[in-house]
Image (cartoon, rainbow, N blue to C red):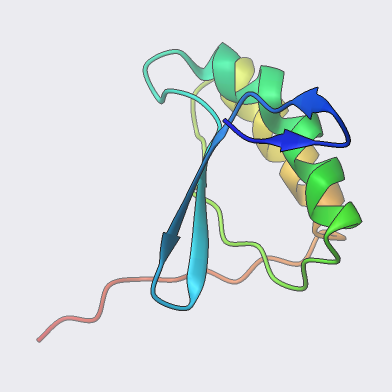
Length: 86
């Protein structure tokens, strides 16, 4: 957790290579992701983040709510990334 503007942030930030990875909750408890999603998206806006990569969420109700918010934040632009078969 880090502090920004005197407030405690409730997600984890890990720097890997040229990128930062943010953990905002647990896949087993998607409510934690939904709970922190608005906070991290606001922080991305404040930090002028240009690109965000996210996992997709397919579970009913909570997963759909998370995906709906991510789609709105992305302006409904989706890039499907698939593993390359060797």
